[in-house]
Length: 241
Ligand SMILES: O=C1O[C@H](COP(=O)(O)O)[C@@H](O)[C@H](O)[C@H]1O
Image 1 (cartoon, rainbow, N blue to C red):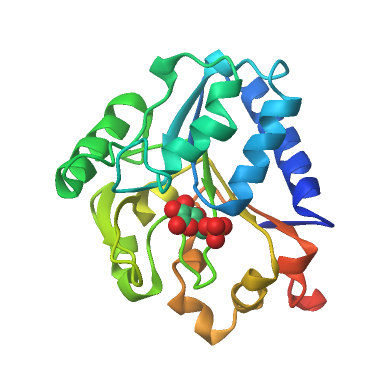
Image 2 (image 1 turned 90 degrees about the vertical axis):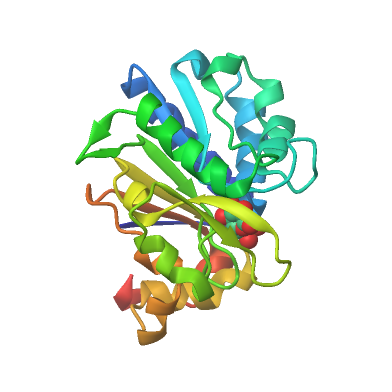
């Protein structure tokens, strides 16, 4: 695990964008699972402004680590956020964008999307393998759409599951642990004060950390990055990091 800490959200976006550009350049095709949330939005803005012509987007295929079960025109849609902040501003073929159909019946879409991953991605260790899974972490320690109260979904034998947001009751389709931990590389993007407690518990390997799905992210490849700003990282103790 590699911890990368920067002074601001913008500096996180800059560093992550450099990392992404190098990864794409090193591969003929790069399959990436995207995250929703506040930090990816800043990263997408940075990429669209600074890497519009510096990345060959035709070699990149985008998927989603989780999606809210709403139509793609809904403000809650992770796909819509990505279109507005990145996809509409770069030159990427539509055929390279593999969205979760949030408007379909969630239980059906979880199966369909799991099959799509098996068709589109290389299979390694009998499972679809992303080159990169980008993750956020909620204030409650959730990642993708696996929440502390339904942490058992992480261990599902399916590629995707339906999860329900604990407060809003909103249904979501989410990747499960077997696919996330099978990725070649996984990168968390986490910023802001409200994340610092959970970041500390996870980084310091405190007993409570096991309650949080984000603590279960441990790709078998061993390549895991946490891109943090100083606000999110402020409670990590030096000797533990
Ligand atoms: O609901 C979601 O939240 C998490 C974390 O988002 P953040 O705004 O707290 O950074 C995100 O990873 C996930 O994709 C999204 O659907």
